Image (cartoon, rainbow, N blue to C red; front, top):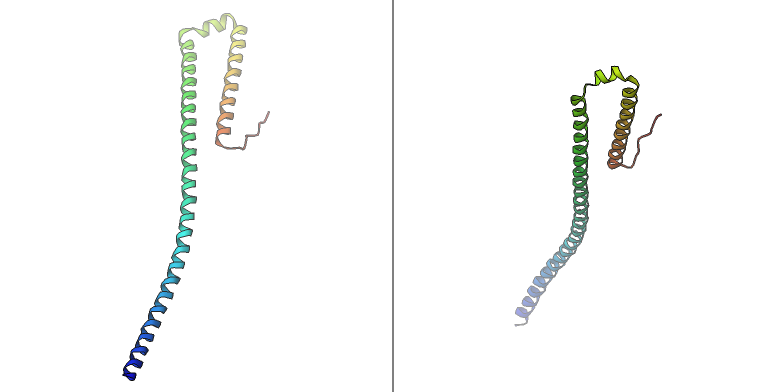
Length: 137
């Protein structure tokens, strides 16, 4: 009986030690996986913030593109109205009759168009980034 009890106790200790070793291995795996889980959750939060930021920038760009399209349409309509003036009037005859008047008006209108182009270019440049173009005069 004593021998049988000793064998049973030895078998019990052997099996218990193996199971405790397996428990320790599983605990190390759980700790490792918990750390990986925290790292992945952090990375996910960063990616979600990045996605939200990109979506906001995309919405702002859509609004800016809409504004630029509207401004472009306005400028096209203005250009068309000016072109219609040239079609409706015989400027050659008028220029021969009153050259100084035509020259003054053309110079004034050209200056206004150039100022408008400069303002539009400045707006586009500022919309693209913080670096303004250097002006040369």
